[in-house]
Amino acid sequence: MTPLLIHPNNWTDYSLIDSGNGKKLEKFGPYTFSRPEPQAIWAPRLKAKVWENSSGSFLSSSSLENEDPKGKWVIKNNIPTKWEMSFDKVKFFATPTPFRHLGFFPDQSPHWVWAAEKINKFKAVSNQANYPRVLNLFGYSGIASLHAASNGASVTHVDASKKAINYAFQNRNLSSFQKLPIKFIPDDAVKFVNREIKRGNKYEGIILDPPKYGRGPNGEKWDLFNDLPLLLKCIPQILSNNPIFIILNSYAIRSSHISLNHGLSEVMKNYSGIVESGEISIVENQVNPRQISMAIFARWEKR
Image (cartoon, rainbow, N blue to C red):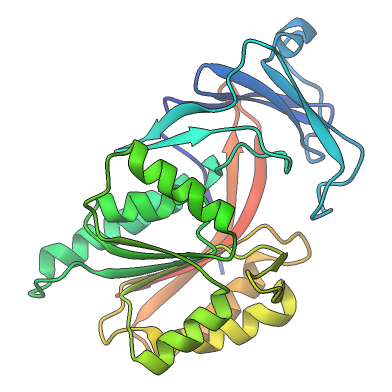
């Protein structure tokens, strides 16, 4: 299989400015931040002064593979705790979190655009009056859900963290999407899917971006390599008779796009469609830009 290499495009509010010496320098709206990036084994191209003038830096004493990293942000006093950003029709807040990121993952934007294309294609050829139904599991702060809904999907957004659901509510309100058909549900993904099977609820599109490790609202444990295969086996039972796409994304370093491809291909073997897989990267905003691989993915679409 030939891997795809996709990366964010057409961002006004986000860019990778420079990278090197185990770090990356990024623009988030009007501010720049330096974060650890062990893949950047090369030297920075910009002068040290540019890096030193960043709005904030994350200082870490542990590996990026650690799910609960030790470290802290060093933020300049003139930086607000959160600020507004946008992508396409969606507005959302950026805020430095204890986990190195800023409340969303800009590298995921190619998936948002791809899903929107499938949703709009479905609407153009379907005789159904209802919106295509999309289930976003492990939905976090809701950008994928909001983008899908703004393109005409009816979205069910599930995350085990009530704090993440609150982020998603804030982003929905900031975007003035209160009237769009989005349900936000704080729940364990596996338990939710099993209940949907019993209820007979079906979806045309599914987005999965599971963590390596996690806990549900009632202490349920999630381990990617143990639990993802079980969750994938349940997916056909919540698909409608006319599914249009599935996105499976992973930041797990011990995996590969090949394993995701085979896993999703097996799940969708009885459906007419294709599976493609590869890596998501971010690309420097420079001449002869370097790329940093951020995640692996597999995705299925109806053909």
